Length: 288
Image (cartoon, rainbow, N blue to C red; front, side, top):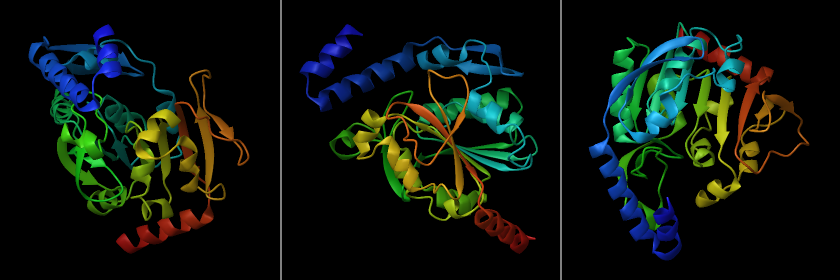
């Protein structure tokens, strides 16, 4: 850890990035894989542990994540569809599939190739057949993008993209067209959340719940954004806002005048507008 601190302080960023990739590949090559079984919320699941981060996150029992607990109380149709953006190795996707849309489906989008392979193996290990894993990066547009070569991957732009993995860039609207419109978008994409919302214009016009992990102004600044920018996409007349911070133990509803925290926090936008509901009902009628 000290070596990493010194490298960041004294070496040019491109060299730091190369050293991080070397460490990432060495971690992958030397890690002793195993399969573990734990209780995650109300569910006993098996997880492949094929890297250090997976071991830190998944090799222990979990309480049900507070946002999944919140969203499991009937607001979303049981046969609904969830987009899980930044799905890592699909533990949360499996919990969403079982708790929120047990009769529906989950589209799990993950930018890191290693995580995608392990995610698919985890689904097979647990006999899950209603989750579709997509290798790609949620962005404002479609085409090609660059993802960090790390276990907890994030988008890389500019000179940082020189040391990265090229992946398909997918907008939320494109996913809606390819997979069908979502009833919930669940987003944890390491500071790129505002950029991804720029590609969700059509999806934002229909009835849909949104969960977003906001990673704080310092991280969002890498992409020219800050936490408060998210409010540009969710008008108070259309969405109720609920916030969860590390110092709290539940989501609380916030008013239009209350600012969002500048630090890392979790936000749920729940649709309440008749305009959104009527728009969605019209879409469903056209499909029938």
